[in-house]
Length: 500
Image 1 (cartoon, one colour):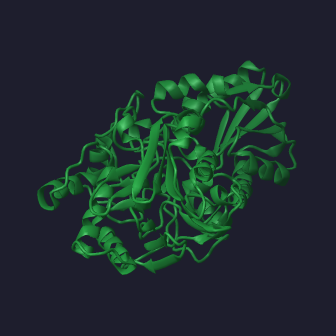
Image 2 (cartoon, helix red, strand yellow):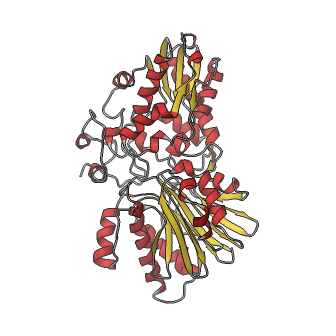
Image 3 (cartoon, one colour):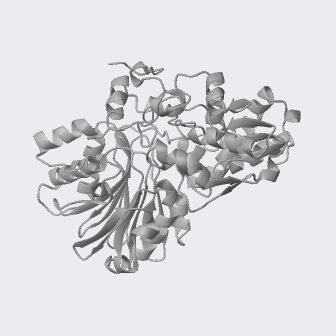
């Protein structure tokens, strides 16, 4: 899960891309990068850290040109500590290409071997994005055969890319001297949209990155579709996948995206309100409302669901936690130890809202359980009589392989545990989870034209249909798990996946 943006304009784009990346900062806090094109020359600056820390005035001055792209990075594969793996990536042939990628390739290892043995291309990092860049470069070279690049050849190259890649990917790339290319995987798992402004056209991960800098959001890029914006600003679009279905990642609506974004025709804010409605029904069946004194959200993403729940149950809604906005989102911090340490730095209680009360805490989701356990203890330390915990999302029981940082079963508090066992780990008096089918229906009602959702972390059903237990174990091998006491991944079972 990263944030990407690309712009073609009749004026310098460095400040515009910087501002858009600030609006996408929630999608990645590990590294940031911007590349621009002036004439046929690329200019690039990237480094580890937040956008405001990576780019200084001198860096911005060194990014001339009316065409460019940027990324905020949140690593799910490769080396999170490596500055080399900050994006964008560059390859000099054919034409010269700079690219950024949001998603995760599930066949990156096989592609890397294929690139070396068959395509004669060298991969210098562990990043699947560099693999993707070289696949794109090879397909462009194949379609043009050394001749001048035309739009038809660009789309034919993307068609070839779709045939080779597996997994999730939203991509933006600069082709030196030609324009900006954006495309999305045939399942539409990771988001991407297109918009325009006065003398410019742009693509981005979320609509807020366009609207927040004064552009007009036009539409979502469709699954399998490629969009090419030439240097004159003319937009060309074509469906480049033979078979498509529309399965956006449901966790975008649960947690990842900003509430003021509209993604795949669905308002993120309204989706969270709807989840609050269905969660209210689950609460009533577990804890009688007359035993709850107050509903308190865990900032920030759970607020819409908590407000809707409180209104439907006729309960007071209060802010009981103050968030330190200068501490990053704990869910996307690398390393379990860092996450645990940062919880109390990130949140502080308003003791008067807890003392002597039975409180219902509402969170957007419970992934590792680290944050939830700490927050429940904070509520007890503040004097709460009873602490109930409700999750607007169902239990996260399965690894994610499409670009969210929860690929190992050992990290998931719900994996291999009953509801009562999870409650004991977290330490609350009652634990209420959203129902999987109810969540899907609540969000699907906002855009019935979708094929469905990728909700694999909740139901174990991987929408690409090609994920096996062996695939997950191989992907897990790329990561270091620091949590302890969880079930071993080798015993993982999936509802509809092969085990070979």
